[in-house]
Image (tube, rainbow, N blue to C red; front, side, top):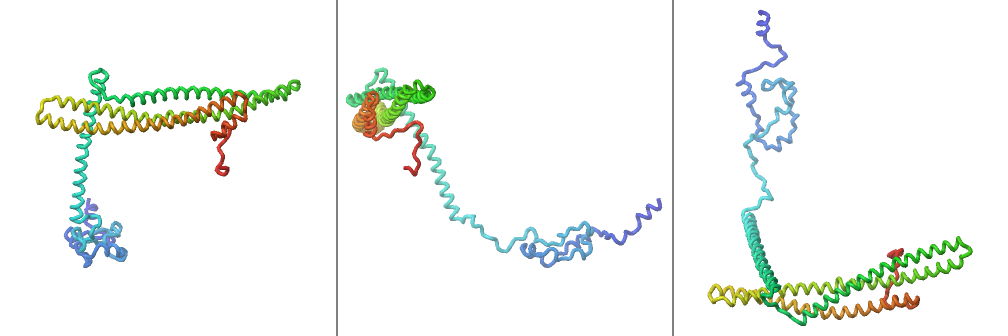
Length: 366
C-alpha cells in the first residue's frame, strides 16, 4: 500500500512533457502571429514546412508524436472577407433581369393562351362534326335535301367504275404473267433434261437434241414476252393505284366539303325560320358567315375535281392506248412464233429484256 502511494506521488520522468493547466494552455495557444490578417492565397502558397516543427518544443501540451504537422499553419478568421469581391459574369444586372422577367411573362402569357386556342379549336371541330353527322343521317333517312351536280356525279361514278374494271384487268394479267413464268421455267428444265438424255441415249440423240433446241428457243422468246408483260403490269398499276387514286382522293375531299356545305346551309335555313330578335339576329349573322366560308370551299373543290377529271381522261386514254398495243403485239408475235416481230415490239416501246438470273450493270458499264 505504501509502495503504490509513493509511486503515485513521484514526479514524472524528465522525458515526458509536464501538463499545464487549462488557462495556461489557452493563453499559450491564443498568441497569433502578425500575419493572421494576410490573404488566404498568400498563406496557402507559403511553404508549410518552413516552420521547423521538429525543433520546437511541445505546443499546447500535446506530445510531439501526436502533434499534427499542420498545426502551425495560419488561416484567416472565418468572418474575414477579401477587400474586393469578383463580379460574376453569369449574374444579370437589374435591367437585364427585368428584361428576362418581361420575356418570361410574355412566354407565360402565350402558354396561357395556347390551351384556350386548343379548346376553341376542339369546340369548333365538335360542332362541325355534329352538324355533318346530323346532315348525313337526315340524308339517308330522306328528311333533308342535298346539293347535287348531276354532270359531275355521273363523271365521278364513271371514273370509279373504270378503276374497278382496270383493277380486274390488272389482277387477271398478274395471274397470266405468274402462270407464264412457271411455263417458261418448265421449258428451261425440259431443255436441260433433253440435252442430258441426248448424251446418254445415242440411238435417240438427234430427236432429243431437236426437242432441247425447241424448248430453249421457246424459253428465250418467253423471257422476251415476260418482259413485255411486266412492263404492261407496271404501267397499269401506276395508272390505277397512283394516278386515278390521286383524283379519287380529291373527290373524297369534295364530297366532305359538300356535306359540310349542306350542313351549314340547313342550319342557316333553320335559323331563318326563327322569330326575329337580337339574339336570333346574332345567330343568323354567325350562321351566314359560316355558310359563306363553306360555300367558297365547296365551289373551289368542285372546280378542282372537274379539272382533274379532264386531265385524267386525257392521260388515261394515252397510257392505255400504248399499253394495249404493246400487249396485243407481244402476245400475237409470241404465239405465232414470230421472233423478229416480238423483238421489234420491245424495241418500239424501249423495253429491255431482264432475265431472272441477270444482274444490274456496274457503274463502270453504265
